[in-house]
Length: 191
Image (cartoon, rainbow, N blue to C red; front, side):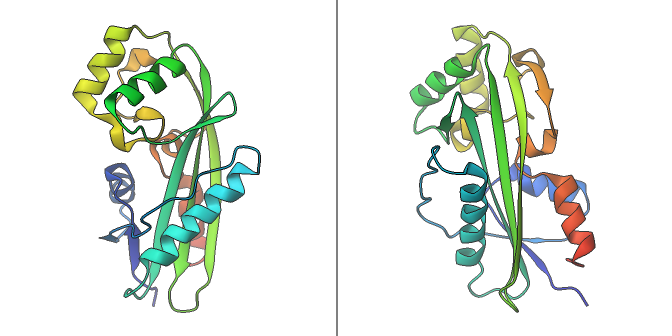
């Protein structure tokens, strides 16, 4: 019998994706209060996987089963764009992404509370934004409130004309690379 799955994330997009793929789970809070900063001079994928593992293990206390946690970052010209601290900061980030290609990296970790085993993986995609006007950026910030999103945007809620090109997995940009996640679920009989 497989163990229950707990999603340790505040992201509505991650909940949506699991529901869309009919993966049974229980939502629990991500209990990692302070995320360590990602150092762009070191291997970013490893740091992001370690962060997903840390979120999963810290959040697993009191639960029995698999705990799934994830983290997504945006990288523009070697600079890491996390979640904006204010609407002004979001505007600055989106202005910097305008007309540029950037990388989106998502890492996830399955942590087994029974035997403390874990599985993790990261995936990368790239996005090229169109050239955006200040008016378009301000309207997006007002209408979509992107303060909880890496890089100040959610791929699923930006207007179509914001995006020139996507190379890679759309769901990785959304916050959970489902093809990799489903492979782990199958291979390791999770849920």
